[in-house]
Image 1 (tube, rainbow, N blue to C red):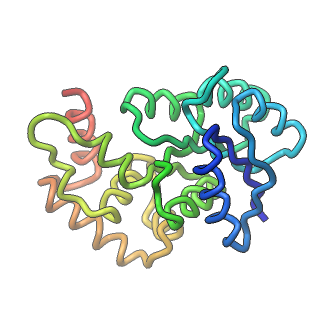
Image 2 (image 1 turned 90 degrees about the vertical axis):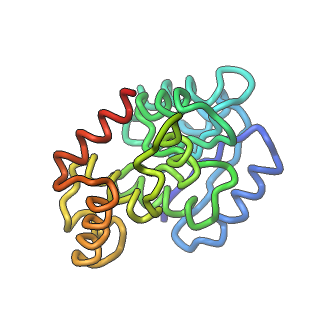
Length: 205
């Protein structure tokens, strides 16, 4: 059973997310708190496996709370929750050690996937967050990718093997290779090295 702590200062949103997660057999929401300060206390009391952390809250906020929690409990998986944040905020949250970032309006499947992926040692960005981070002025070579193709790109960047990708995505090795071939074709690259170079070039423009 995966123990999840939910941190959000909006009661209605927190209730909705808890309701979704309560329907999942292997997820147990062990607590709901509404501030970063309360989250730190709840971690010591309940020892969660995963924290869904609202990024912007009164007081120290979700980013600072996450930083303090990870300094003491580096094995806890923290996933950022937000509605409309800048790319800089998302990147800062991931860089401090969080393993994911999802929108509060994400589907129940994305919420569950983010938690399962975190427990599997991966990182997760919900589709709308990926699209926001990829959208820049001018031509966006990644805008034509499907959600599955974007997931393959993310796993390639993480250095995952075909076998690891198939396990994370829960599809066959052959299907992973099909998605990868489609990515290559759409982006005009021949291999993973060229793909990563394209990503670096695009991110630095």
